[in-house]
Length: 103
Image 1 (tube, rainbow, N blue to C red):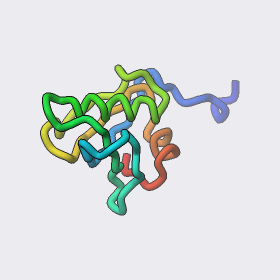
Image 2 (spheres, rainbow, N blue to C red):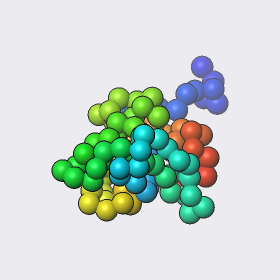
Image 3 (cartoon, rainbow, N blue to C red):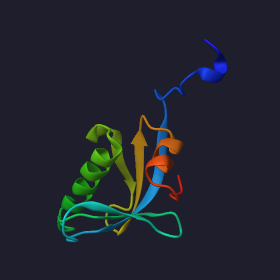
C-alpha cells in the first residue's frame, strides 16, 4: 500500500478542546463554536453532583459517534468552561465536525 494512501492510526489518537457549558439550558444540544474557538453546548441537567458534566459527556459522545468511555472531562469540573479529551479521534476529525473549533 502506498504510504500516501494510508489511513491515520487512531489507536493512540486523541483530540482536546474547550467547551462552554450551559446547564439547565433546555434540551441537550451543541449550539456551535464561538469566535474564540470554544464549543458552545447546553444540557437540561442541573449543575449539581456532576449531573451536567455527565450529560455533556454523553452529548459529545453522541455528536462525535464514539463510545461514552472515549470522552473525558480533564479540567473545569466545577466551572462553565470545560476541557474535554476524546480518545480515538484525531484533532482534524473534531474540526471537521465543528469548523472553527480550536483543537
